[in-house]
Length: 320
Image (tube, rainbow, N blue to C red; front, side, top):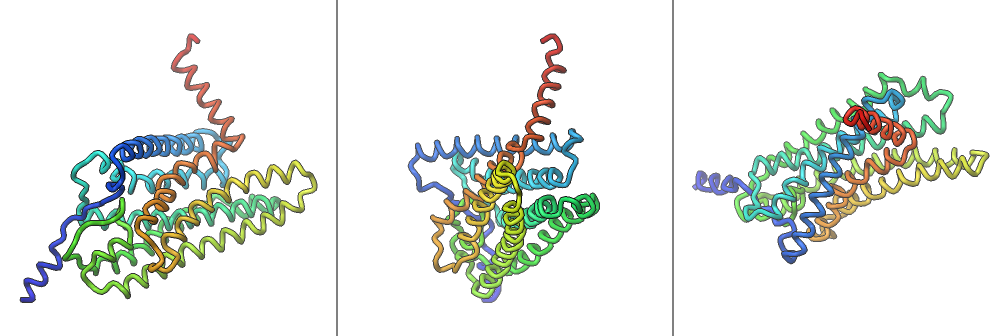
């Protein structure tokens, strides 16, 4: 009898991702094209940012080093969910293996936690540049920059590894249909045939702490920056500084707002259909906007990009 129960508990070997299959067929085709183009532009834009920062010596400064790392992260973060979502629009078989689902969940949360850490690091870098300009070079040394980035990656992946140990204890022996476009926590908890109250509570506490603590640290840096900007004597200088910070705050509002809605509120108040829409902001829209917000609005980056494009054009078409 016990053997039969064990077999039943481990019977689920794959899950079905519903995604947006309930939408009208024409709307699904439209969404497929939009998501495909967005994904291609996201990968291309972030790769260009990494390449420009790497080849142009004018961009060999801490701020651009962090931006290149963020671009590298965004490529992988959006690639965890977007390709599977796009393929499922055109596929009859919308399944994902059990191990594939666990891997997707792990990398989604690990890369997401790394992103929050990098946003804190980037806000601290801007704080040092604006509020401590004379000490900036001695504060943001190359060694410290590398340590901050490595700490963000290693620390986040380690913390989420402990989370996955909790998730791995769940058993799935009943329905295997996930009402989402990727293996998020809430739908997985709903499908488990074991008691998930303790695991769900610990998961919620962990993710909420990551999101809210990084938000507080980031806002602390930008709050100090805000008061420093107010002390700038010229209106032009203040306007330029506010313009830069405004775009950054817009990006932060998207990523933190979506994550607070998804993970930092009581689970009873959440709807999986609403979560799918909000998750698109987090997994698709923000990685797409990242190159425009942090890099392509920057005059130095645009100048380096233009010169690199001109040199490449000259080499390809020397007679023009």
